[in-house]
Length: 231
Image (cartoon, rainbow, N blue to C red; front, side, top):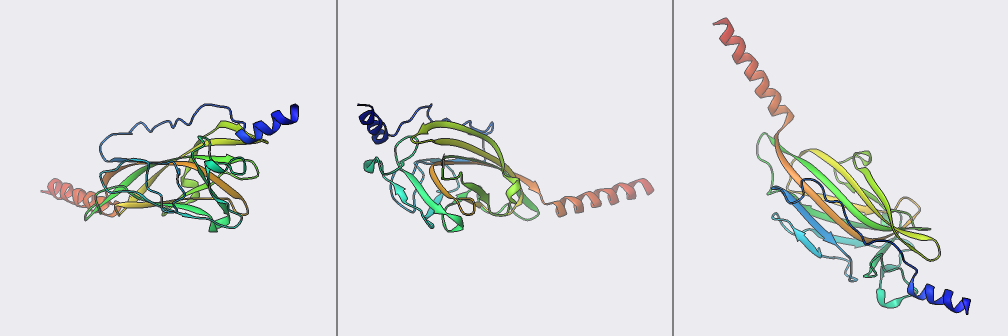
C-alpha cells in the first residue's frame, strides 16, 4: 500500500508552494519601459513572448540544447520529465556554454543620437530547477558578470526526490548604451546542467549626455564664465 502511494506521488510529481509571482520594478509601466514574459509551453527553439509590452519591437529568443540536455520537457510525458513549476513545459538546456537561451530585446527607438547615450535599467526574472541541476547564470552583452546583482532567490515548490523550483531576480544598470537593443542570455554554470521554466525581462531607458560631450560642454561653460569675469 505504501509503495503504491509513493509511486503515485512520483507520477504526479510531488509539488508544494505558491505560484510564481515576480516583484515588478518600481518603474514598471512608466514611459520608456518594456516587459516580456516567456513561459516556454511549446517545444519551439525560437519561442515568442507569451505576453509583451514593448513599443520598440518584439523580443526574439533562441534555445540551444547542450551536452546532456533533454531539451523541452513535455507535460504530457510525465513522470519521465520535469515540465516546470507550473507544469506547462520547461527547457533542460544541458551543460556548459553549449546550452543557453538567448534573447534579443528591443529597449529603445534606435540609437540615442549625437552626443547622447542610453542609461538602461534591466531586471531579469527566471524560474529554474535546483537539484543535480544547477541554477543558470544570466549575462547581458556589454556588462561584466558582477554587474548583474542577484536580488532574490526563493523556493517556489518541491519535487521528488529532493529538488526545488526556485525564482531568481537579477538587476543591473547599463551605462553608455548606444543601440536600440540588448542581448540577454541564460547559461548553466560550467560543468552543470540547468532546467529553465520561465523568463521575464524588464527594461527602462533614460537619455543622457555622453561623458565626453558633457565634459566638453562643462569646459565650454567654464571658458565662457572666465571670459565674462575678465570683461
